[in-house]
Image 1: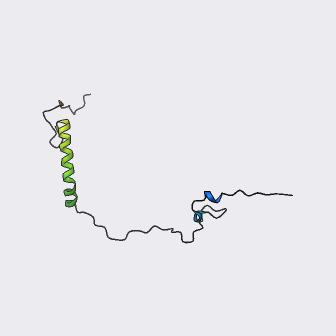
Image 2: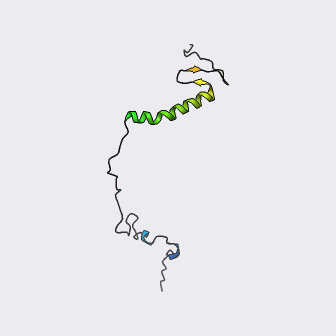
Image 3: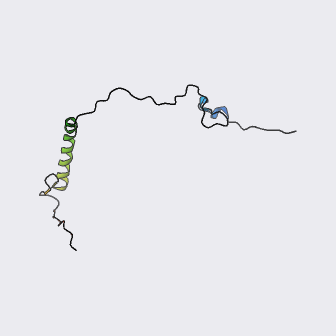
Length: 97
């Protein structure tokens, strides 16, 4: 007498019964209404103009510059050292052979 047993997952371990796959197939789902395409937003997007972008970033950019100047006593916009904590020394850009 040949006895065959089949291994199965206890029902208590199955979280989503609709997610059970068809035996022998890893690509098919048992859900007949499975969505295979992503819905795209077709509403028109408003792209800001250059002046709007400049206006938006001007405030935070100036704030970052001021924080940098206060921290490092150096004005990056004018490439100029300022009096303060650090002593700045200009380096020669030409390479000596």
